[in-house]
Length: 92
Image 1: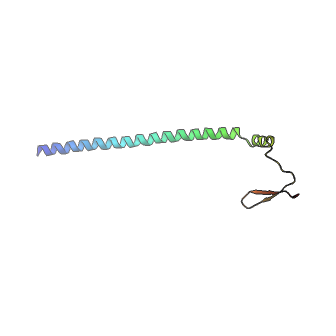
Image 2: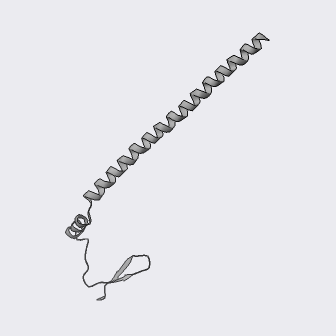
Image 3: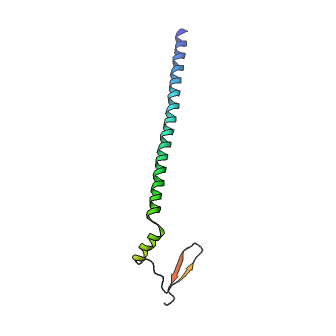
């Protein structure tokens, strides 16, 4: 009888320690993932701001003009409902 009571107490203590360890471990994992998410989010925001600053519309337009990518002479544009312009040369 005494051995079975001691066994139950030992099992209870073991279960308590195991469950407490599991709860702490889960909280630590959640905190670690939250910190990694915050770090990734701040990196994304920083990179997005750098891209927006370095690729302004004016600089892209200047680059396209200097490389001959923009040409709109003797063309007529037809805009479809999807926002895509189809051009045709009316002189042909």
